[in-house]
Length: 501
Ligand code: HEC
Image 1 (spheres, rainbow, N blue to C red):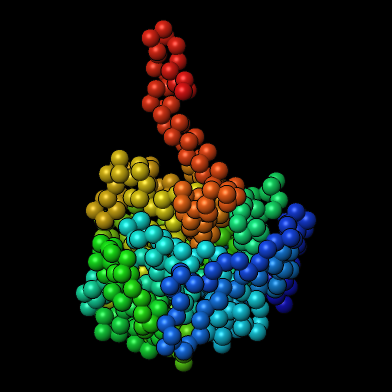
Image 2: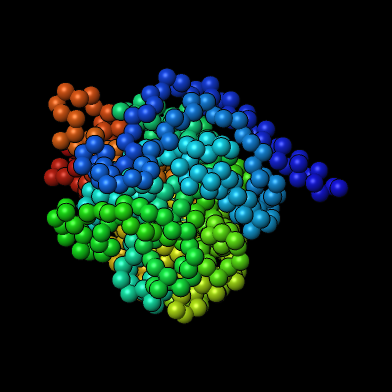
């Protein structure tokens, strides 16, 4: 009897802490917010609408974000106690996250506004989205059937040796009410977003309230022939690219981005949750589809692959892996849980449904294999920062090569596998944290890309504050770099040249 009582005590304490924090946020929250202004899908009303012969349902963004924090529920994951900043039973914790994310949403086919159990919401500005730098601007934006955005594609041989051509990933993310409150504060004025209002209390960290939760469904155009474990996967129709090869599309012209309703299959589900008990304040976990798993429905055949609550910032690549392709000993990575059985089973030829990233850290099967969930997500902020060391300007100077030399230049690389606390900015090149939400940082970037440029709005349109900030930021960043080039160097009279402009 002592155990259930103890668990109850832990849950109660977590609830109380959340409630007192909520009071401060609610007191300072803006309640005069304008709602309903965001587009639902790519080029809505501008040529992106469903064709006349399309008879199916059309996606609508759930955007009536609450202006006060909905009270915390007794979330199922709170029943799992924590030890050393992570859950004592990670698998039970992860399963509780998925059960909550699916409840009422499965019945509604994730048209979440129809959920009969609780309210769910979507992120603004994903209708115009640029996921990868080489993609044509905006072309990754939400399609009109489910509101899915186009993501990073998997080139041939990524998921299995039977997959010879590119397959495309399309995904959608859904926010619970406590997460939606925070996003709704950032976008209280849809024409003037305030990245620093994620927490309306400026004396606190700019983070989501405890209990915020996001679930993401990742579909792929991959077929059972290309990936045998995709048999019996949940199959939906979405308005996807006619041609799956990003290299061909990105050569242009714009007509190469033509979309048409086609079949996609659910192969991965990601979840993320704000839980104050975690050492970073967040936990990120993932499930992969396995057609050979037990389970009466495709949802039930989603296998838990792993959960991460920290990156083990001091554990270098060489301490876990013998070489670029392993083998890796993950015992030093104590801030995650990996389903070892699935890791072995799903990577046996012809499968390569790998969910291990940098040095054996958790990453999703359709993610970059040298990344980690929390590594990418801790960079979330405005302006956005490169999500991987290889993508940063310094990565080019240091000539990083994740595929061939992941073990070198650890002093720079490991910054990307640190444990940024919830709500703290990742890099001094950023002004605001968007607290592990990469959709939020992309959403703000998407807004700026349309509303801050020379062609935006017209000469009389009011300038959103974020545009002025971005301009001032760019000037200051450039000046700082220029100053470093001459810092300490004397001018002709011995005077400082640094800062002379
Ligand atoms: C290579 C970098 C990268 C890795 C690794 C990565 N993600 Fe993401 N993730 C992103 C980006 C970029 C987005 C936003 C774009 C989108 O959702 O279309 C995102 C979005 C999400 C979202 C939607 C909520 C949000 O705004 O962040 C969740 C949940 C999520 N990822 C969970 C995970 C989990 C769990 C893992 C590990 C299994 C993971 N991610 C690994 C880059 C990454």
